[in-house]
Image 1 (cartoon, rainbow over the protein chains, first blue to last red):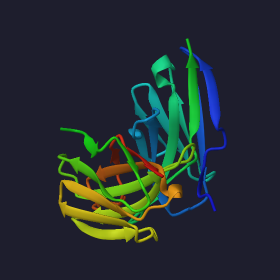
Image 2: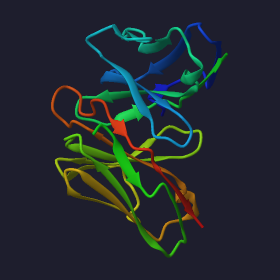
Image 3: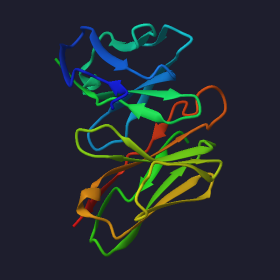
Image 4: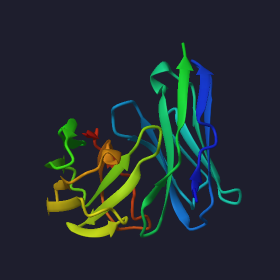
Length: 111
Length: 117
C-alpha cells in the first residue's frame, strides 16, 4: 500500500514559468513533509520541508503548500530554471518513525 | 563540512564475495540511515542507527549487515548477495530523534552503485 503518491511521473515546463509538483498521502499520522531533488547518479538533495502545524513554507524560489484536510501537498518552483531539471521526491514522516517516499516526478525545464 | 561521503562510488562483486560499503559524516548528526534504490523507484529504508545503536531494521535479509563503529561512520557489510540486490545504496544522516519528527531533514550521500554478478 503506497502511503505517499506522486501521480504525475513527469512534468515539462518552459524556463521562467511555474512548476507545480503534487503529492498525496493516506497516513493521517504523518506530521512532517519534505521535498528532495535528485540528479542522475547522485543522492537526493534536501530542498524544503513543512511541519503539519503550518500550511505554507517558502524558501527562495521554492514554496511548499500543505492541505491537511485533503492530505495533499504541493511544491511550487518559480521561476523554473534549466538547472531545476531533475527527479523530485516528496517524503513524509510520523513522529518516531521513518521517511516514506513517493515515487518521484521527473521535471524537465525547457530553455 | 556539510556533506555525507560514501565509498566506493561503484562496486562489482560476485555472489560469493564479501565486501563493505562505507559512509561518513562530520555534521554532528546522531542518526544514520541505509537506503536501497532501484532504477525509477524511490529510496527504500533498510536500517536506521540512532546514537550508534540499531533502532530500525526493515526486515532486511541477513546477507546485509550494518555496523556503526562511531557517531561519524556507518558501514554496510555484504556477503553472498544475489543479482537482484544490484542497486544504488544510499547513506543518509540527520540530527537525530529529538523533537516531533524522528527523521527531520536527512542529508544523503552520493550513493554506491552496486552490481552483483
